[in-house]
Image 1 (tube, rainbow, N blue to C red):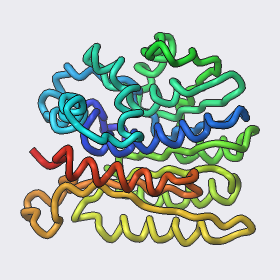
Image 2: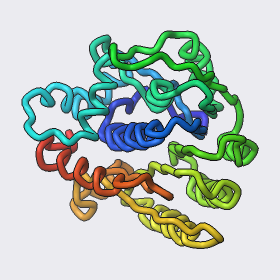
Image 3: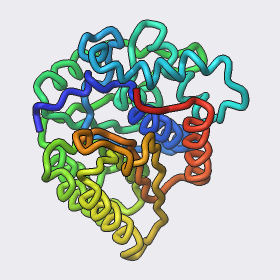
Image 4: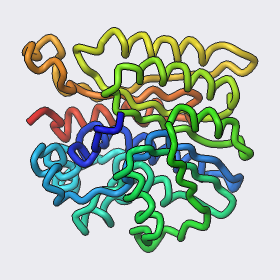
Length: 293
């Protein structure tokens, strides 16, 4: 759906969960010298201004990235996965920016790696084209990216099918649709089944919203993908991690369309990712006090 603009939501609690998980997967891929492929199926604009009037209007970054950045220095026993993510974001945060998935992915690229980003929204495409000409903001310990990012201005699901399997078959698919279009639930299910069938060594990371009015669609999508991951000649594990900010039973009827949390489904996860994300989510809930405004 071309009406969705992530500028209203950048750096919110859902982004925090998604990007902590993404950074950890990318860090895992970089442990080996072998090249990898990243396919980001719903790229968005890649970099967001925390001073954008749309973001200031919703205030979602205040209870997300701003909240955790402002309190991180006072926190004890900060989990490594959260500390790693915040260290990457800090160079952007210090300039009133938020690094989205595309920018985080670019920070990890090395010579020989392949990076495909898919986006169809005209405004997001234009911003991505400018972004890819900009230097990365990184700390002194990070080495510059040597791989080229390929921007695909196309339908996410059709292009995902066209790109799979990639020439370099070690890597990640990140799928993060808006879910504003009712068809997204079926499209995600069918597309990621296709990815799993054609590229069964890939790590698949799917973000999904927790919405009271979409409970059945979400459950069906997740169950179908979990079941499918167990089939074929190379069955694999999968797990979910969810950051729930409110009991859905306590949500007023007029607010049923609002997020009460979000989750990540990881198929073929890296070693120890499940334990690390479980620790991170618990820390966000108990130590960071993530909750609705």
